Image 1: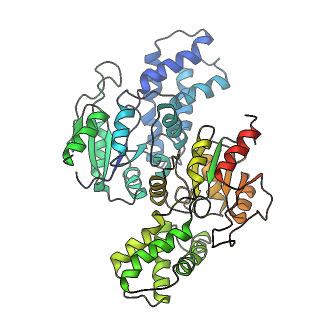
Image 2: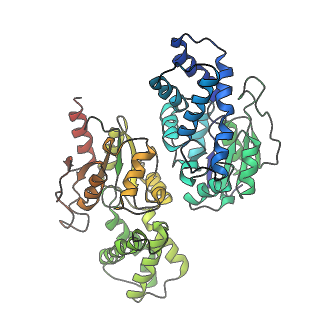
Image 3: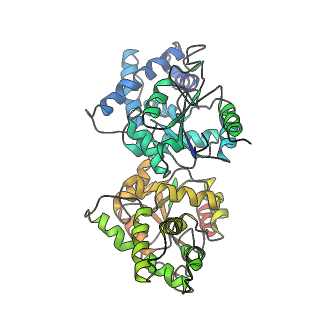
Amino acid sequence: MHQVKALVFDVFGTLVDWRTSIARESKAVLAPFGISIDWFEFADAWRNLYQPAMNEIRSGRIAFSKLDRLHRRNLDAILSEYRMDHVDEASRCLLNLAWHRLDAWPDVGPGLNALRTRYLLAPCSNGNISLMVDLARRNGFTWDAILGAELARNYKPDPAVYLSAADAFDLQPAQTMMVAAHSSDLSAAAAAGLQTAFVARPDEFGRGKGEAAPTVAVDISVSSIVDLAGVLARSAGT
Amino acid sequence: MHQVKALVFDVFGTLVDWRTSIARESKAVLAPFGISIDWFEFADAWRNLYQPAMNEIRSGRIAFSKLDRLHRRNLDAILSEYRMDHVDEASRCLLNLAWHRLDAWPDVGPGLNALRTRYLLAPCSNGNISLMVDLARRNGFTWDAILGAELARNYKPDPAVYLSAADAFDLQPAQTMMVAAHSSDLSAAAAAGLQTAFVARPDEFGRGKGEAAPTVAVDISVSSIVDLAGVLARSAGT
C-alpha cells in the first residue's frame, strides 16, 4: 500500500447520492406537467437502463458516445414507458442534465481534501468529462485530472478504463488504487492490476439496499472517504 | 465574447517560463558531470527539436505518443550532439522530467483564480496529462480538467486538439476561448472556430525574443493573465 501514488474514484453511488438527487430533479422538472409518481422508483427505472446501454459500446456493437447521450436515450425510453410523451424537448434536455446536479455524500468533501495532501486524485467514472466537471464545481471537489470512460473511449468494467487512468498519471496499475462502493467495479480494477478500496454505501439504492460489505477480496474496506484517508495515513505510519 | 463559457490555455511559454526553468534544471542535473556550458543555449537546443518531433505524429508517420517520450528522444539527441554520452540513464530520466518542474510567470496564479469564478478553465497543451498535473501541483493551478493533446491523441495545431477541448466541456468552439502567447497557435484555434486571446510574453525565448504582439487577428490581446481577467470582466459589464 506504501507504493500507492494516486487514488481514482468511482463517482455514481461512491461519491454522490445519485438516487436522491435524480428523484428530486425528476420531480422538479416533471411535476409541473401534472405528473405525480414515486420519484425514487422513476430514478431507479432510469438508472436500470444504465448498464444495458453501456453494453452496446463495451461489446463493440456501437461506437463510443458520452454517457450524457446514453442517459438521454434511456430517458426517452422511460418517459415513453411511463406514458409521459407530452414532456417537451427543453424539459428533457434539462432533466437529462440532472446527472450533472448530483449531491455528494457528506464525508466526500473533507475526505478528498485530506487525501489530496498525499495522493494524486481523479475520478475514474463512466460519466463524461463535462458531467464530472459540473459535479466537481457543485460539490467543491478538487481533482488533479478527469480520467475515466471519455479518456479511454470505453466503459468500465473494460480493463482499458482502469489502465488508461494509471497510465495518464504515468503510474503502474499497482501504484494506483481504485475506490468504489461496488464489488464488480473493484473486481475488474483488481484484475487490471490496481489496488482496491471498498467504501460502504449501504443506502445507495434505498435504505439498506446498497452494498454494506464487499463480496470480493479488496485491499482496504472502509465506511467513508474520511475513513479511507485515516486508514491510509495510519498505514503510511503517520 | 459574452458567449464564452470556457478558457483553454497554451502552457509552455504562455503560463510557464520553460526556458529559465529548463536552463536551471539542466545545470542542476548536468553540472555534477563536470559540464559547464551556456545553459540557456542548451535549453533552446532541446526545445528546437520540439516541433519536428511532433510533426512525425501530426503527419501520421508514427503513432501518437506522449510528449514526455518525445522530449526524451530529443534529449538523447541533444546530449549526443553536445558530446555528453557519459550522462547515465537515471540522470537522463531525472532531466527529462524537468518539463514537469517549470515555474509559472508571476501573473498566472492570481489571473487564473480571478478567471475561475466566471469560466471553466483547462490547459489545452501539447504536454501530456501527468506533465500538466505536476505543473498544476507545483504552481497551484486549479483546473476543471486536463484537456489537450493526450485527450485528442494528436498535437496542436491539428484542429482535433482544439475541437476536442471544446467538446469535452460540451461547448461549441465559439463558446471556447484559446489563450496563447503564440500567433500560430491562435491562428489554428481561430480556424477551428474558437475565440482567441493573445498574451504577450516578450521574453519567452530570451529578453525581447518572444512575441510582443500578435501577428494574426485575435479577439483580445493582453499583457498578462491578470490583464485578461480584467478585460473579460469589463466586457461582461462588471
